[in-house]
Image (cartoon, rainbow, N blue to C red; front, side):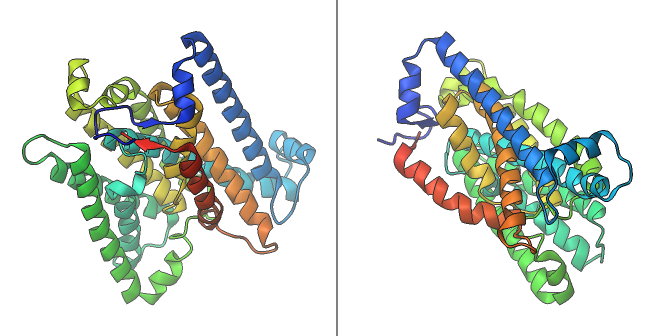
Length: 357
């Protein structure tokens, strides 16, 4: 049975009820094994991402090319195409997974995703403006415009939510984000419809794809992702306190407004960087935190690290599937995550009976 916001933990499932009855030592051992399993899953996904494509390469060839860049065709494919693509998937996936866990914790809404606060829409609008107004087509330059758009959207959302009595409550953050997302989406869609050339350039990016990632893109987004991840992981304890509601969090000594502001700042960095590099991917930031909580419970000390590992694994598996599904062509990773992921997420919600707090 659902309860009012703030009166109970973020999500409660049958599995988390059983976990609460386990001894702390056994529960932590299970969580540690889950983290190790997620790490193995990510390594497997990265290996497949390096080996699978229009030209399949054996693990031995991949390993030899990674150790010895001898200028061969295989080494060129690995280093020039697949390594940047794989690293972009890891960086973007980790950013979206952690951002999704953050937004769900801050709003106490398990159906929230990084797009709810309008940050993805702001980043997308920044890219659209750079192409339609300024005529900039460089992917490296678009990363910076996406970051500016994400920051502007984040500041607007926080300004709207923090005005008036009570400060930036979860409800105000969600409503402010919905308004800003609608405004920025309307702007970007209008600009694309008025510029056919920009629409042609942006239609693949808007779906979400790893295909255009290169070394320059990675160099640009990595600092933003790193700072965002460090900031997010530093907030795990106050986020756990926020699950008890604002009054309960304050009673435990948590700074509610500061936690929400820093959480929004981390999401802005993470979503802006991921969206600028691979486009506005759907599903990853929504479903992965659910899976993490089903495995480890609602403790953010475990949910965030698990999301950090599971999300890039999911994104890389989707990218690999897109490469082989319609050979010799490719399906964008965003299409695969939407088509394959949505039914899986519906099944998770239906059979795990996730309850909002």
